[in-house]
Length: 279
Image (tube, rainbow, N blue to C red):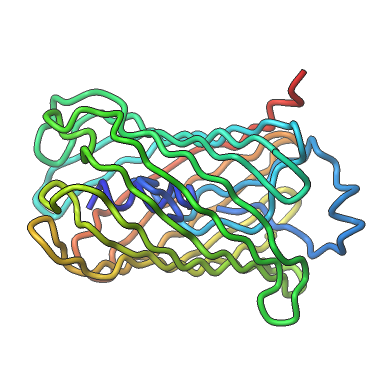
């Protein structure tokens, strides 16, 4: 399930999440804005998608670069432990589009604690289709492709090319932001290393507590899959505080608790850094 979760993060963090977002990877609260306000938003201001699996419909300003990076410690039901380090580089392409480049480093896998390395790389393009819609709010799509760049023999990759699509609906209710994601992934291959099809859903919310301190909570799930690599459905809770240290830097930490299925218990921490504008 490590592979599946990672895939979700990449399609969030994100399929939500990704999409290897092995780690589910809180949102700093985003005030609802009109289209002129969005266009005039300070491009230096971070737009965290960490640490939830779900992503929001917002995009980085054109030609600006933002990095999301974190660490996650997973403890599986069989006692195995895994450290993962997901990273998502976000580049603004236009006022409504953002390129995502995602990869995750691993220290150990559920089958081999000695494994070290980087997993498969995912490329995605988030495109916002609707701003402030009456039902969908801010609505975006995130198609993505995961390439088989990591060795299957070491348990770091699936050896498959994955095509994913994530639907993203973001809303603001006073001080509370809510994001709803629904996505699906289709993989090449024979289904032995990873299911040929899988899906993800996530509902997250974030709100301010005091000053720059906020809190994020999320319920996410991976419906059951079939085939040789099939797995039981997963539903889990993610929650924790967020802190915006500066306009260009936000931090987060918290835990993930399984509600059903083979999702590992986890602790996570990370940051979102607005690096600056491309030359």
